[in-house]
Length: 359
Image 1 (cartoon, one colour):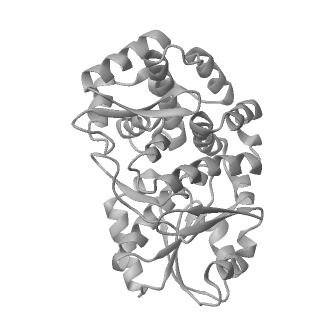
Image 2 (cartoon, helix red, strand yellow):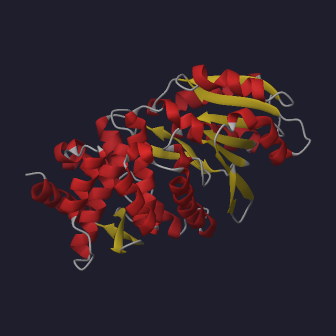
Image 3 (tube, rainbow, N blue to C red):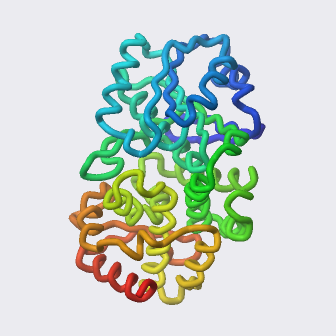
């Protein structure tokens, strides 16, 4: 088991990374909380619960699990309705301010559970126990929240976990599409912060990712979060590919695309925009498209997108300033920058991109 540490302005917390950590849950919780006995509330989903919930209960004998809440799998569960139902369950379990919420699942579970923990009695502790490759990204950094019909992640809070327990053996049960989804965020960290990581993952194949690559990917994010916990500056670089991605997810209907699929589509456009604005950038968009297609990604979402609907969706993005659309581009390899474009200009680039690469 390896341990990384995230050091933010408000707190530091460990990321435990290794195999068979679910079986070591009691020992790990002792490292987090010492001899204190905690009342625990587990939030998970209908995919993960049958696989791992009983196992977690068996391996946490000192602490008392006073309740569980199982949400339907999928992005649609990041809703006000599900938030309200889960909050009611937590109140009925009579959690107090020393209780701990456990997020056992992927990014949807982690985002919802973290937001619940951030708002229950004005904030209680929570622990992230990610079960997907995608959640290696979302479980680190303290962003929590839910969606609204007008946009993705528009309701939320920054709330850092007490720890992240990442059991890599749980990834073995993931279907290919979930590997592709999580791999997208690993690629993102390579593009914005680690050329060696990018070279490794592009040459490895989606299901051959190693613990070392995941450690490198998490380290890129941790370094940025430590420098800018509340996204006032460089943390915005982690949104590389996400302006298009969030719009694709909303326009397609939440759940039609996985988050990672949408991010990879978004990154390709961001690379195109980078090249248009910085012609000397040593990136060839067609080569990147070919490489990503070989890894298994489809770019049908970009090819068939309704540009006007995409623009309407992007205008609600919380990253925008003065009605200008914010996006992250590369000015040099591994050197991201935030830009703001008028909606008409952004729309023109989107149409040109479609015409040049999918005509």
